[in-house]
Amino acid sequence: MSELLARHRAVMPNWLALNYNEPIEIVSGKGNRVVDADGKSYLDFFAGILTNMIGYDVPEVREAVERQIATGVVHTSTAYLLRGQVELAEKIARLSGIPDAKVFFTNSGTEANETALLLATYARKSDQVLAMRQSYHGRSFGAISVTANRAWKNNSFSPLNVHFLHGTDRHLTQFKGLSDADYVKACVDDLRHVLATAVANDVAALIAEPIQGVGGFTMAPDGLFAAYKEVLDEQGILFISDEVQTGWGRTGSAFFGIQNHGVTPDMLTFAKGLGNGFAVGGVVARGDLMDAPHAVGLSTFGGNPISMAAANATLDYVLDHDLQANAARTGEIIISGLRAAAERLSVVKEVRGKGLMFAVELESPQQAARFMEETKKAGLLAGKGGLYGTAIRMAPPLTLSVDEATEGLGIIVDALETIDAEAAQQ
Picture 1: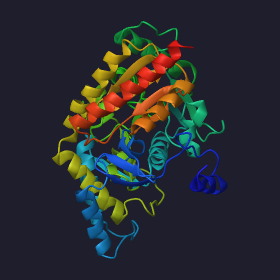
Picture 2: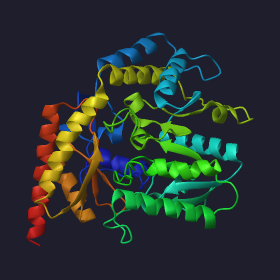
Picture 3: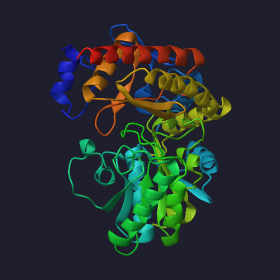
Picture 4: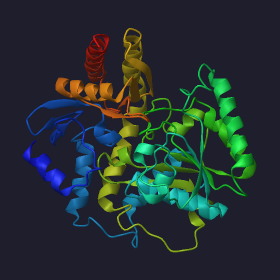
């Protein structure tokens, strides 16, 4: 055990999970690569859990932050006007497509989802919320209540009355073999049944991830949420799209994940990649929903000048370099390559993803852990998750080059071939 690992275990909680049998300390980064304390270089296919969205040591972001620091003002609070906050809110409101949108900034995706749930339950005067099976929306009390993954739930207590829907669980017996259209119909029938049997009076909202992050990048077929929204609109139920992992062009086919379903939500939450490593999250919502609460509110650090400088520079970089198109291009190289390899690898149960957000479902948690060690040895960082701990999930920076995509694909396939060969000998 390294000296730093021993110190970590002495003072950090046991549930703060670390990757790898021998966890690494990342000490430097440039572009889409990082270096650990032993001097080993890695191509980063997990980006700090989808947070280093445009890579490391990006001059435009670094210089924007340095300019703000040079003013001597790193914090004022929202009690004063914040030019960077207003500028970023204007961009996000425009990009969201939500009519008459207003934006509230937080420090994380958990905070963002808590805020959206507060707005929805206030507007609808109801504690009843719909969420998706296999979902993850954060670690706080309210966010855990709309999380449907037992590995991430510490208790059953909840400030909300929650009912969970189908939509990302096609592996279940009753859905196997269904076409997209038939699966959507079955899910909509179930939604109507839930509304007819399990709830009382008004429901506040449905909160959903267009692609489930911790769930292992499982996703509903395109169009499901549009079909859900038709039903929700009949009763005035609000729709919250959790874009903490799917936003800013990562899916390649849309700037926000929910747009793949042809849906404009009532609220949209965001965090992670927007600050390219600096803490930022938030909610963009219809103005009437955002303005409705009667009590005074603020966020001490939300919208702070440093995070706003980083986020403005990051979003401008994404737009100026059309990184959504790059995600589509490089993601197709990787996903199509993985699907081709999967045809000859018995340990691969499924390859799924959109753009630079893709996953490989293996047969067992042990194989997933083995994959992590093999790719680490070969110089690539990945993540794992899924409902059963069997999914490898990867989301490189949106700046990934074609050469890096090809390099990463090769490392992934080599690791899968090793695991497949080992499984064949057992």
